[in-house]
Amino acid sequence: MDIIVLGPVLRHHRFILDPRSIDYIRNIDYIYRSRLDKAVEIYLANLHINPRIIISGAGVANLGVSEAKIASWYILLEHDKALPDIYNNIVLEEKAKNTLESAIYTKLILLASGSRKPIVVSSDFHIERVKIIFDYVYGEWFQNKYVGSPTNLDSSSLNRHIEKEKAILSYTLNFFDTHGIEADDHEKILLFLLANSKWQPVK
Image 1 (cartoon, rainbow, N blue to C red):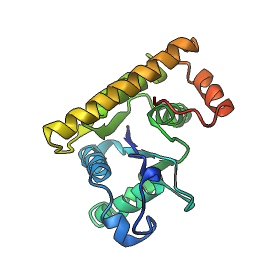
Image 2 (image 1 turned 180 degrees about the horizontal axis):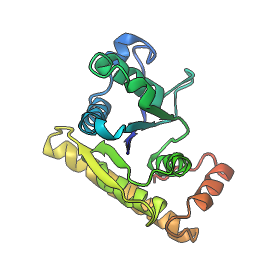
Image 3 (image 1 turned 60 degrees about the horizontal axis):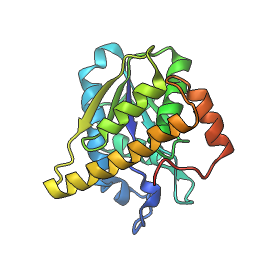
Image 4 (image 1 turned 90 degrees about the vertical axis):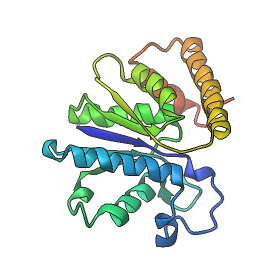
């Protein structure tokens, strides 16, 4: 079983601390920390089937380190004593710059391993968009499950996040329609992204 965790776009943050430092890693953004802690919680509940944690997220700023790598350091710092073998069960996906790319690149990892029943973890306000995009990109051969990690945002902040998610989802679905991309056709999306490296699924 694979547990997929999506990154929070740390590369857009303005870093006061070096993201490679222990001080930064121990004080990683709460929303991301919540996603990672939820993934570890699911991992612990499924030790009997030897799960993997796949962390998705591309490079941060120009520091030569990815969101996925920073997240793996956080897990090792915070959970390694309780889970000494977890290092061997973490897989880094370090190319994805957004949710759509996370769906594509994690699907490639699953196809290579033969895994077809992932649990995808992201924040509560993000998980609905994740579900629609991943189900579309992965196609009917996968049995995906989704878990939203709590953000404890106040209602006003939560609603703002949800409205933003709806707008991005609408833009992404329009992209599928405009380019004639059918469900399960991750290869066509990937070819487009490789040819249009600056394209992002946002307004």
